[in-house]
Amino acid sequence: MKSDELSGRVAVVTGAARGIGLAIAQALIARSASVALWDLDAQALEQATPSVGGNALPLVVDVTDAEAVRAAVMQVVDHFGALHILVNNAGICPMTPFEQISEQEWERVLAVNLKSAFLCCQAAWPSLCRAGPHGRIINISSVAGQMGGVSVGVHYAAAKAGLVGLTKALAQRLAQYGVTVNCVAPGTTATEMTATWSQEDLGRALAKIPLGRLAQPDEIAEAVCYLASDRAAFITGATLDINGGLYLR
Ligand SMILES: NC(=O)c1ccc[n+]([C@@H]2O[C@H](COP(=O)([O-])OP(=O)(O)OC[C@H]3O[C@@H](n4cnc5c(N)ncnc54)[C@H](O)[C@@H]3O)[C@@H](O)[C@H]2O)c1
Picture 1: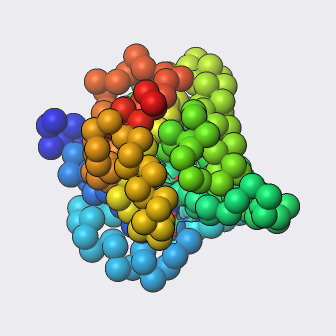
Picture 2 (picture 1 turned 30 degrees about the horizontal axis):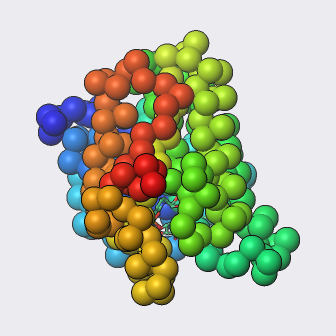
């Protein structure tokens, strides 16, 4: 990895105040990109931004709100002069059993995990197309979208599977502009999202991981940086699995 690999590139990372999103923002900045960190949680965003260093722009954005997303894209382009890389990472993962999921919770989970990516892509695509062969969309799905998950809610698994379909469809639409669209599908990763899991749920997840441990957020960030770089210019419509072999069982 070259520390200036993404010099001159501008990225948006959603859900960047903690966990995987924060690790992605840090890794992009370590490669000299400028990064807008979007999150709903203003306090966490304020605390996290100094740890990112470099050229960072924190913005409080609810990615389920189409108007807020459009305004934030304009703010990023005004501030940095361009937008090359969009990382749709914001997500929520309720563990509610299937029989107890309300219609309202279904809609919220689909909105945060799937509709948000559509809104961000739609608002950002003109700028990404102007970035031409440097244009990148990277969607953070989950192993749950491929195999249904170990303990997570069915709404979460459905939303994450939807992201894989969105990735493939958009990869075809945006290829004519040189923009690539890919997915990263993490397995169970050590963040606040999984810190709330019961010992039982965690034990069940660990037992299914051949490499015998959780992923670290920077291991997911590493893959995102690769897909964002020129080294991955010919990869589009793909899903990169980072799950310690969980997918194999
Ligand atoms: N942690 C895991 O085991 C794991 C595994 C597979 C996939 N993922 C996915 O990776 C992504 C990041 O997960 P994480 O573990 O870092 O989660 P996290 O809960 O630690 O962080 C998620 C961030 O998203 C933000 N967010 C939530 N709703 C938002 C909204 N409407 N608008 C803007 N920001 C919002 C939260 O405030 C939070 O800062 C998620 O999409 C998640 O589904 C996580």
